[in-house]
Structure formats: structure tokens, C-alpha cells
Length: 328
Image (cartoon, rainbow, N blue to C red; front, top):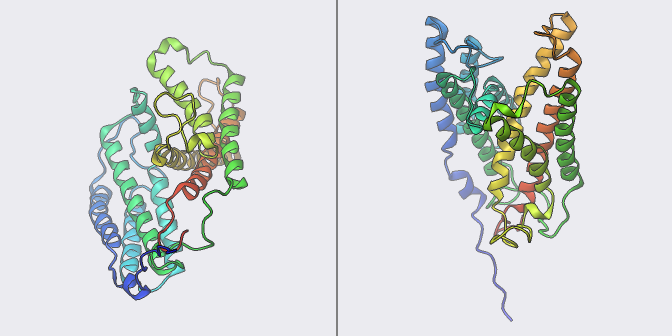
């Protein structure tokens, strides 16, 4: 009886000799985007009506500083020949700050998905936010590459921990996170029920119906699909696809995008709401939505985002292909 052994994994020295490319992409982005930000800081940014801004939190020279910080992290990753936890931590902080700066991208994406961008949409602002998102994605990938090359146990995949058991049950933390996302969605609906739906009639057209359907799909179906078997294999009632494996990216891509969007956008919103509450500067507008409504709705969205993101991590770990070298 013969057994087939996995192909030999490359040596650690060979892995380290592979020169990283992504850090240089981060440096190139920082230089290009930073040049645009410097020009806008010196001569004034274009007008982006009606919000008059493309970014939030980090604007003007703060946006320039973020680009400079990203470039320095990229240079550090390119030069590193060993695992640098301080550099990685700094990189994650910069990555999070860049994501926060383009938090308004969530409104653009939702508007485009329901084919009703709204009066607050501006193509130039959208492109600027997409440029920031690109920089965050490049930095994220470069940091993961740094960790994979120089810290992991396996010389092939860079993963750590015990060998993955494909038949293992869904982790309790992932299931709890999925239900937390559902709870956040339902709390948001409860807040709307409290103030009523009079200003959101179905007569507004197909865009409103699309928004409501998407709201429920992203708030109930998507989180639960990440932790139950029908998110891995199509259930029997799905024509032509029953029993086939669900493409993992079909769930992971929207889950990742919306979780990051919800966490960033409503994280900024909660911080602003806190300041307005403490300083007494909250503006109720027409008075239809009281302060208590926002203190329910915005944390509910934030809970939804975090729950969706954690459940997506669990789904990723559970459905990724095992490494041929270590089985993880």
C-alpha cells in the first residue's frame, strides 16, 4: 500500500527571498494620492456639492499626513526581513484611518445598488473615496503578506495554529456574531417602527422597494448564511443548484464590504452623536426624529456591521481550502 505525500514546501529561506511587491504598490499609491491631496490642500479642493467634502475625519492636511504614513509603512514593509509587530500594528492603524476617511462611500454604494444615488451623490467625490479605499486595500494586503511570509508556522501558506478540521462545527463565536447582526437589523427596524414609516411610502418607486429588500437580505439572510449549512451548499429547494457548493465569494464579498462600510460610517456617526449629545448641539431638524431614535438606530447599525464582519471571518476560516503542505 502506497501513500501519496504532499509536495515539499519551500524552505523558509526561499520564502524570505521572494521580494514583496505589494509594499511598493502602497508606496506608489501614497505618492500619487498624496500629490493630489497636497495640491488640494494648497489651492483648495474641488467642490463636491451638496456635502462639500469627499472625505470625513481626515481631511485637508490630515489626509496628506495619512498618505505619508501609509508610504512610510509601505517602505518599512519593503525593507523588513523579519516579523515586525510594531510596524504591523502601525500599519493596521493607518489602514483603519484611511477606511474611516472614506466612510461616506457606504451611501454611494447603497444609492447605486438601488439605482437612486440621491441628491448627495457626486461622481468626483465617489472617485476620491474609491481611491482611498484602494489605498486601504493595498495596505491591508501588504500587511497580510508581511505576516504570511515572516511570522507563520507553515513555510508554504504562513498559517498558524492546529491543523484545520473540515468537519468541525461552526464556532460558537461566529454563530453568536451572526445573530448579533440580525439583532442589530431588527433593532433598526424597531426604531423605525417607533417613529413610523409615513415619510417612506412604497409610492416612492422601485428604488424604495429595492432598498427594503436589500436591507432584509443583508440584515437577516446574509449573516445566517455565513454560519449555517445552507450557506455552504445550496438547499434542496433551489432549482438546478440544490446540493452544489455555494461559491464562498458570493457571501464573503458583500459581507466584507457592508460590514466595513457599516462599522466605519456609523462609527463616525456615533462619535459625532456623542459630541452633540454631551455639548447640547444636537439639531433635531424638523423634529420628526428625536435624539433617542438616533441613539437606538446608529448603535444598531454598528452592531450589525461588527456581527456581519465577525461572522464573515468565521465563514472564511471554515470554507477556505486547506494548505497542501500543512493541512491548515
